Amino acid sequence: MAETELIAVLVAVTDGDPRVLTIENGYALPSGPLEPGHRSLQAGLRAWVERQTHHPIGYIEQLYTFADQQRGGARGISISYLALSREAATEYPGATWRSWYHYFPWEDQRTAPPLRAGLITRLEAWAARDNQRRARITGLFGTPEKDWNEELVLQRYELLWEAGLVPEATRSALAAATPVPGKEMLHDHRRILATAMARLRAKIKYRPVVFELLPHEFTLLELQQTMEALAGQTLHKPNFRRFIESLELVEETGRATSGMAGRPAKLFRFRASVLAERSFAGTKLPLVK
Amino acid sequence: MAETELIAVLVAVTDGDPRVLTIENGYALPSGPLEPGHRSLQAGLRAWVERQTHHPIGYIEQLYTFADQQRGGARGISISYLALSREAATEYPGATWRSWYHYFPWEDQRTAPPLRAGLITRLEAWAARDNQRRARITGLFGTPEKDWNEELVLQRYELLWEAGLVPEATRSALAAATPVPGKEMLHDHRRILATAMARLRAKIKYRPVVFELLPHEFTLLELQQTMEALAGQTLHKPNFRRFIESLELVEETGRATSGMAGRPAKLFRFRASVLAERSFAGTKLPLVK
DNA sequence: GAATTTATACTCAAATTGAGTATAATAAGG
DNA sequence: CCTTATTATACTCAATTTGAGTATAAATTC
Image (cartoon, each protein chain N blue to C red):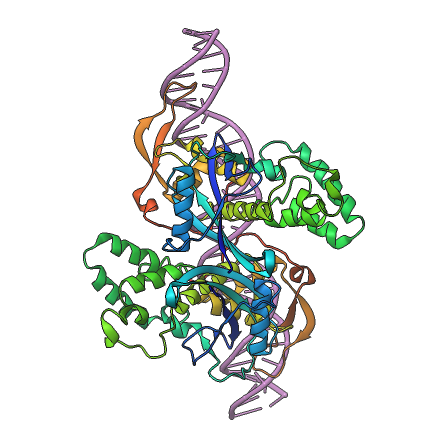
């Protein structure tokens, strides 16, 4: 009897940090079987994620389906989903929110990357004088600071896998000689996480999904920092505001922040027309430098 | 015992017409069960599509997975795929290539649309003075000639479904009073087709997948017409060429066409670097007018 | 009340895009 | 064999969009 498994990448952004809900203290993504009582796949996922987090999920999107060999030769189907929410205290033992940059530190380009240098050195050692490998490295990781495409999360992960620089990949082969504690994940859960990151980074540019991650009222800086957290890149402030204005995404509430240093920021909310399903055209983020 | 079904939307472009392979004379998309011998889901799909068409498939991409209630309360999982190929004679009885505009005539914007006017009239009758419905109609179908977004295939289909203007939707309700012969499809196959169209229309703008649909050598006009067929829109010739040049997608073969009227066209091929996996950035098609 | 801090508004050059025109090279017709 | 029709290719230019920066406003802090 083949079983159908539902796997969730539940994302929230807290304090400029994109986090995912994990179980077993970061070792696995939460997952649960499709049950007869579930009306649909999405309903099934929604049901047990809300059961686990006691928090309604705003947005759900299917990521990918794959088949895995199970014990006894049977074949299981796993369907993974991206879900957006806001962080809430979890009550389940072992269930924790983890920064996704914990698993993919090289994907955070917001700070100066001393880490990436070492990574690229090791990649180049692997490439040696194989020109195709070298081309893939520069294509995915860019030259010094140019041409970084933040959407290629999965491709970069797969390159690192091939190069044996991912703990799951080395476990069987070169053995646990380089155990990076806490970064390893069950089966291909880290790969699923990479897929979710790539999908979300692409999505925020042309669909208004960020509002699932923000409170009802927010400042433009909070909105910008949420986008920056997801994209892993800093954005040009004046141009970001122009970008948001051109989308007619938000409107002023009339209120403003108070108590913090500096000029108070106006509070905004998302427009009703945005919440009622709308798509904005293919645009680019106004990156800085 | 739940069964896993693989459903294929196999697309080819012939004579400026995007076609899909169907069975039962256009009533259904080809589909087959996942068998124990298949190494993976993709391998399974590839295996039996090639068995049916005797033609290698270049490109496969997963579309969507859904669960359907089967006889006896069991639940089946269906996984749909988009595949690209070139049209070949089929040998199976009932297997035919059909234009996708046969099923979605309003999606072809290349010719003056006398049809769309009638469709919108009927939609507006359905909307009556419901302002939200009216907003959705203009959002998806645009004002007179402006703002048509070719990627919203699925959303338009779903709006028409809600409005009862799709044969599958009316079959049970308002009955077969308006049977549009040959446009009806099994289950949600037409919905799957809409998903495939939307995905492919989005993809051709930022990933070089068109070459799966073209012969080894081709003229720039053939390339343009293939893109136009998929997008359902005419493109501005000089700007299209500039667009293709900027992508560094193709290179001259040195040969040219001959025999036809007019100046002979240079023949091009796709560059090796394109074939070896490459992503070009998010761009827009140079639409005309 | 001066300094600091954060928010918001405006400016301007560079690059990209939309739309059109001009020229080249062939086949067909008289 | 020269003219016309037809298709391919090359170039131009204004309008818009983007990248990057500077200036001003309104609060807190010392």
